[in-house]
Image (cartoon, rainbow, N blue to C red):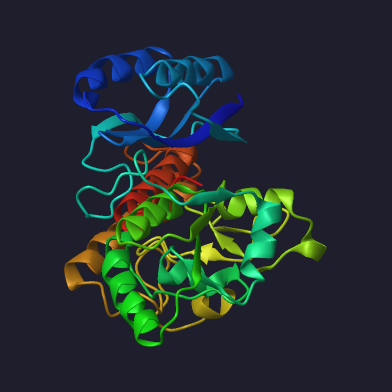
Length: 330
């Protein structure tokens, strides 16, 4: 059976979001949809999967929310249900920045389509900022982009305030251009930056993925691969799966060279996280990996989960990591 996966977000004023949670959850559950939907006063964000009819029902329900009529989604397919359960969660923010009052519904930068983007970032008077996290930047970014070296999106405001002080000390007032994977982080980042008093602020509409889908590779200013929070780990310019694997302990991308390191233990640690994990975490991850390996070796269910359920668990872990990182659905 083929399942449709829909990833979406939309900023809109949603002050009574809490009152919609139960009905939204009931409707999606009745449609056989699974995955995660975040709702907050600033809008909705989520990744869900189901039959084509179920996803159609879910998106129609989401678009019926007051203000969400133009919600768009990115679609992909899977041969197995990629999620174990449905979660509709109430949040303070649909992408976590942690700065009260930052509202893309009230104030946001100028949207640029991928073709106009090339012209803007080629301008020497433009400062190009990657709003993603350091491990995302490390495997690919736009030519000339600045890496804020953030671990989560929450760190971006403090970084930008320090960066702005440096610009002012140099007497510079450049155009600010920002981007992220699918658009949600840079949309919120431009709102924050404009609220800080910067006027010339732009962001890439549809994010990196839309750019890679739209701009021919020979005209592209993208270099490397794009990290995505799903089983593909990264994608190349044609949006086919890239060359990276994932450490299932820390959810960072890893290379074949990383996997040859003594610190790499499948499901337990990698060169990036070996010094971050506690002994208890390593013990727990090792036990989890042992059960997965036994299940795969036997080709049978172990304590319930079969191969598809294991894959679903991996995807849910990746979604949890994405939410913790302040990232968007890819």
